[in-house]
Length: 205
Image (tube, rainbow, N blue to C red):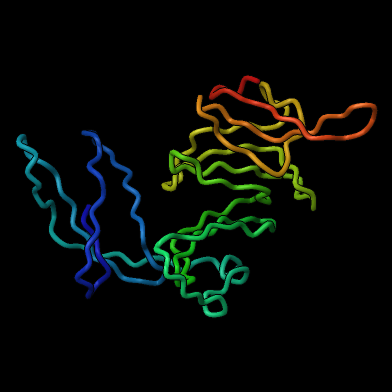
């Protein structure tokens, strides 16, 4: 898919998908309440692109009001010379992960019915998050979730399932083996302290 904001000369092109009848192709860098033009392409035997159906249009929906109430672009303008992005969470219920550019504009967000206690962008450019269905004011969570930026679920583990038998709080990460490492609570002589718990990709401890 080649797409662009209507009237703009800057065009974006998605990656080529696998040969199949049904395609689900995420589009990035879209802004709310904005009309875009797009063109679908297929490839010939020699991988030459061929337009299918000509130029079409779509208009994006508005970002939900509660998402913008928590982070108001007009009140949070920044001017950072770095070309990177900032990521943060709302720590509210429902929760939201935000990614903003170096001018303070929202470029990506994902909502959750749960409170988000910790989120990390992994070395694989996925999002690893600790979510809390109980919405407590503490740093604990009962769901570990890894997703792509396109919204595909790569890992889901809930407290009480498989090896998730200890409380997890404040931080999670992926180690060199691809396993998920989380901070957990350890009681010794009735006094709580921190420990580490490691899950493989099947959720086993």
